[in-house]
Image (tube, rainbow, N blue to C red):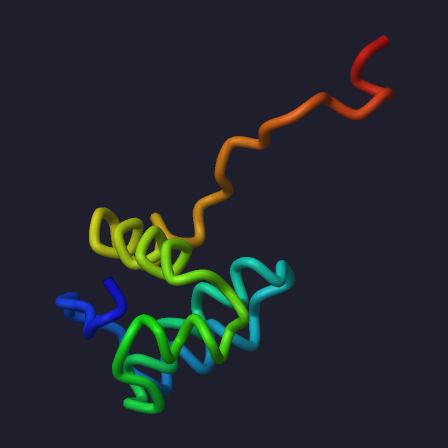
Length: 91
């Protein structure tokens, strides 16, 4: 499960650097950073990128699956928020 991902990253290293600088949410930043690390050949396995980002391997695999399904746009799409709504929304 920690091997080399079989995914072709289509964005260039330069483009990923530009997108990385525009991220305001830490989760989106980490997702783009994952792609950047793979594309720039700084890491080659899921285990390595998980260690660099401080995330679990399952999380990295989930992000790669999201990228594979719909590219960068799908990877950065805001996901459904779970849990109880804020108290201001309960009234």
